[in-house]
Amino acid sequence: MANKRRLVLVLGDQLTAEGAALRAADKTRDVVMMAEVRAETDYVGHHKQKIALVFAAMRAFAEGLRADGWTVAYTRFGETGNSGSITGEILRRAEEHRAASAVTIAPGEWRLRQALEDCPIPVVQLPDDRFLCSEAEFAEWAKGRKSLRMEYFYREMRRKTGLLMAGDDPEGGQWNYDAENRKPAQADLFRVNAPRFAPDGTTREVLDLVAREFADNFGGLEGFNWAVDRNGAQKALAHFIAHNLADFGTYQDAMLEDDPLLYHSLLSPYLNLGLLGPLEVCQAAARAYAAGKVPLNSAEGFIRQIIGWREYVRGIYFHEGPDYTARNHLDQHRKLPWAYWGGKTEMNCLRHAVAQTRDLAYAHHIQRLMITGNFALLAGVDPAQVQEWYLAVYIDAFEWVEAPNTAGMSQFADGGVIASKPYVSSGAYIDRMSDYCGSCAYSVKKKMGEGACPFNLLYWHFLDRNRDKFAGNPRMAVIYRSWDKRKPEDRKMILGQAETMLNKIAQDAF
Image 1 (tube, rainbow, N blue to C red):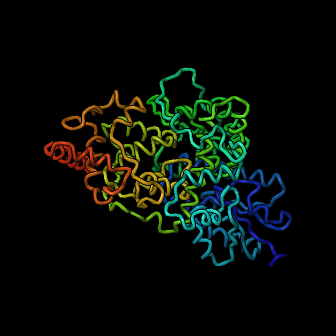
Image 2 (tube, rainbow, N blue to C red):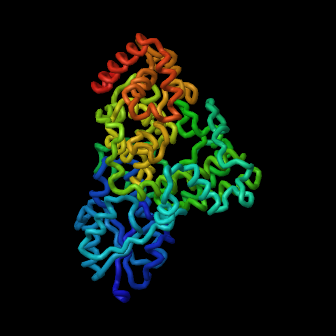
Image 3 (cartoon, one colour):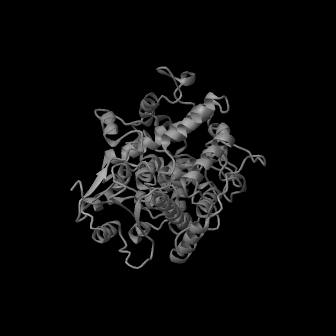
C-alpha cells in the first residue's frame, strides 16, 4: 500500500499548502483532488458570496499546487461527470487514477467525517494541526472539569504560545481587558476602509456561475470584495494591523447604521479557509503591540478572539459529539421569522443587521450575538433553525465554529456547556452600543405599552417562562429580584403585551 498511488483530498476550507495531508503525500506519485459539488453547496442554502469565495479560493489554490509541481484532479461545478458529492468524486478519481486509498485532513464537521468513514475505499483522516490546540489536547484539558469556561482555556493558550506574556505572567498584569472594550462609536469620515480586492478573471467566472446556478440563494454578489488567495489574505492582515487594530479593542462591541465594518478585521473567512494561520495572525498583532503601535487592550482583545474563542469553540464542538447541534435545552420551537431572510420588520436594529448580512455576508460578533441571536432566543425560536440560518448566511461560517457559537453562546441550547447564563438583554444594551434606536419605529425607552421596544417586552417574558431553569443561577438572582419587585399588574401587562408581540412575530407582522 505504501508504494501505491493515493488521492490527496483537499476540501474547500483546507487551503493550506503546509496542511497535514499534503505533507504526508508524495508529489511525484500522488494525485491531489478537489471538487465543487452539489452536496456541499446545498445541505444548507449558503449565501451567494460564501459559495463564490470558496469556489474562487479553491480554484486559485489548485493553480498554485499545479505551479508547485502537483498533479491536481479538479472537478468544477456542473462539469460533465461531476458526481455531486465528495465521496462520489473520490470513487471517480480513484478509478481514473488507479488509486487504492485517499488521505485528507479530518473535516471540520461530523457530517463529512462520517461520509468519509463510510466511503468504499479507505480514507485516512489526519488530525488538523493548523489549529493550536488539538482535539486530544482539548479533551485532556476538559477532563474532570465541572465547567468548561473559555477564560481558563484562554489562559492556557496564552502560556502555550507565549503571546503577550511577561515570563509566567500576562503582559500588563491582567489576562483580559474587556472592561476597556465596550465603548460606543461615532461616525468618522477618516476611519480607514477595508482594502478592496478587484475580482480577477477566475473570480469573475465564479461570480457568473454562482449568479446563474444559485440565483435563489440568499444575498447579493454586487458587494463581493474578498481576497481569494493567500497573497490577498496577507494583504488584508497587514492592512488591519496598520490601520484598524489600534482602535479595534475599544470599539469592538459598537454598532453603527452607516458603518457596518468599523474597526473589525474581516480576517475570519481567511482563517477558516486556511489562507491564514492563527499563530501568524496573532503574532502580527503582538508585534504591533511590542512596537508601541497599538494599545494592549486592542492587541489582547483581538488575540483572545483567535487563540481563546476560536480554538475553544472548535474544542467544544468535537468534545461534545455529533448530537451537540440537536440540543434544545430551553425547549423552544417557534419558527425563524421571515425578517431574517429580508422580510419586513419595523425593528431598525434587526433590519440593519439582516440587510448588511444580505449585502456583505458579514456582521460582527455583537450584531450576531446581541441582535439576531438575542432576538431569536427571546422570541423562542427553534435553535436548529437559528443554527441553519447562521451557517447559511455568513461567509466565515463552518459548522465547527458556527454550532457552538449559536447553540452554546447565542441560544443556550446546550444548557450551559459554554455560557454560565443566557446572553439576553433588553433594548437598553442595543441603545447604548449603537445608533439603531434613534430612527426605530419602536421606542427603546418604553418598557411596556403601545410602541414599546420588542426587546423590552420579550426580555421579561423569556425570563418568566424559563424561571424554573434560571432562578437558581446566582448570576441571575438579582434580575429575578428586580422582576419580583414590580407591581403584579405591571408584570401581568408586560407578559400580556409580550404574548401579543410573539403572535405578531409568528405572523411576520412586527
